[in-house]
Structures are given as structure tokens and as C-alpha cells.
Image (cartoon, rainbow, N blue to C red; front, side, top):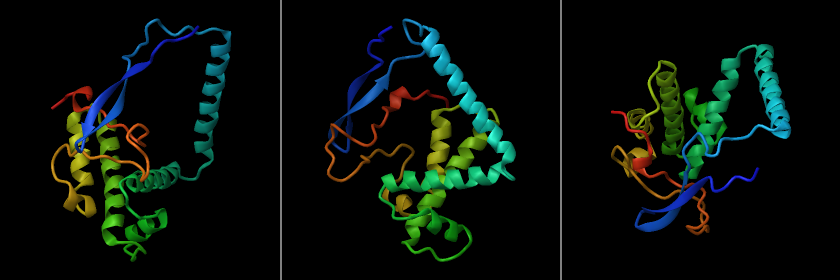
Length: 185
């Protein structure tokens, strides 16, 4: 079965410049996904792989320690999109009250990413819906101190992110328009 277009691009303006933001088609897809023999085998392989990954957590002495490291790694990578110079070792030194080898504001910003993510996960585990309100709460934590707190204030600041030398046709991220996020206040 050949599927058609899975969404559309909309031109959105960021910092006075237009970029293309991809808006996915609503789910479930139309026509519905057909599970033929090939797809069924792929689905079974994926399910088996997830089961193996889940079983590995039984071998870990402390799965929370694995998640601890993973969340921090993701925070470092995410903050690098914004131009911070912090590394995972800098963040770990900061959390141990040691002096990191990068500007203090950079490592504080990465620490804010960790705090914002942990806050969001806890709220979701508690039954709070993924919503604008939750995003604003996380954003407030992200901007609570450090370099970003000085540069951007507000509940929904907007600016371009990406790599130097890339044009707007090939951005490294395409911000979603605000009216595309489920509103819950």
C-alpha cells in the first residue's frame, strides 16, 4: 500500500524570517494502516526488541541511575542547540558543587533543562495532561536562572534555533505554531 502525504508545511515567521514548519496529519491515518504479513513481522520484531530492552532493566542494579545519566545527556544535547558550551562532565561537576570548566551560566542552563524535564515527567506521572500549561511550567523552570533567564523573558518566547551556515529551508528544528499545541489552562 502506498500512503499519500503525511502532513503539510506551513510558513511561519520566527524573528522576522519565514521558515517552513511541518504539521503532521491527524491520527489515526486515513485510510487506516493495513497490517499485512510483512508489517506484522516488523511489528513483532519491534515488540520483541522492546521486551529485550525492558528485560535489561532487571539486570541493572539501579535503573534510576541509568535514567539519571540519560536525562542529563539529553539536557546537554538540547542545550547545545541553544549555543551552550557545557558538557556532561561539566553538569555532573556542577551537581557535585564543584567548579565546571565552562561559563557558570552555561552549566546552570543545562541544570535547568534537567529540572524542567524532571518536573514535566513528575506532573505527567501524576495524571496531569500534556498541555500548554505544563509547557509553560517547564519553560518557567528552564528560564529560572542562568544565561537564558537574562536573554529571554516571557511565557512563550520565540527565536530561531539551528546550526550556523544552514539556511532556513533546512533548519535543525521547526517550531510548532502555538495554535497547534493542545490548549489546557
